[in-house]
Image 1: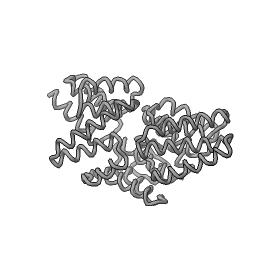
Image 2: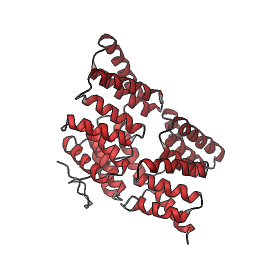
Image 3: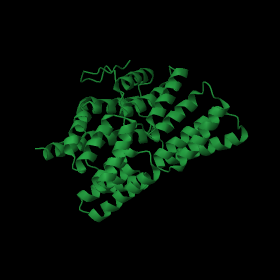
Image 4: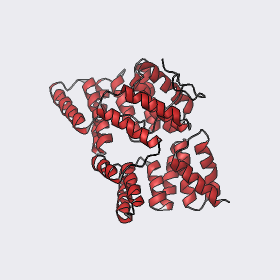
Length: 340
């Protein structure tokens, strides 16, 4: 049994928490697409199969994450709604799917509620706790996330739970433990994609910069705002400022069009867009949840609007638990420097 001991710098005994949208490896789009097509064919033959509708919905959630095509969210919701229409009570698979969909849309309160329904139906099944870990971490409920993660580790100490454990440790500044958790995830990985995912995050913890070419390839596969911004920053470091600006503009266009991810929108706008828009995004997100993530976004948005005295308490809150992300520390140093 794995124990998350919250005050110890050792992973071989774990009591703890979760990940940035929880860092969970994802299948390749082709595999997911084939699964979706197979399920659609099955449902044409057996349209009253609630479990198949739930699986189809969850597959579309994963396709949305992998491809960053928001059309899959609508398809996921339609399939999961049909599953719940056919089986409104005790539908564990649909509860997990709706929770995953809500997390993906940054509707973390709804995700928490779906996760609670899932674990109420199947307290000995790990996926429901994964939904809860992700939602509660983003909502800033550290104690609740810790309990959910511990249960997930007890039930299934594999890639999904170890990557969440790594993020738990990272948020507390326990980087050695975070690395050990990811190394455990590598050992538990069952596919090259899972191994690559874990090694990518190990490199990130080590502070390694990703090459421009690698980021360009990633943007081509998953053109998410986060990837576009990372690619833009790499281009900027390489002196390609005009091309970097293109990436930032694309990221902001996506965020404005899609909505939901006000946290990322606030940070991207603060660094590469309109400071007033950044503050509007940050305040909107803060009204929904008061986590370390939103505290940092509020601090940075206030600072770029020349309100550093107001920003400092938010910055204090962001690092109070030990989180030492380089961008958070950069924000904090700038805020503190402006007040001297």
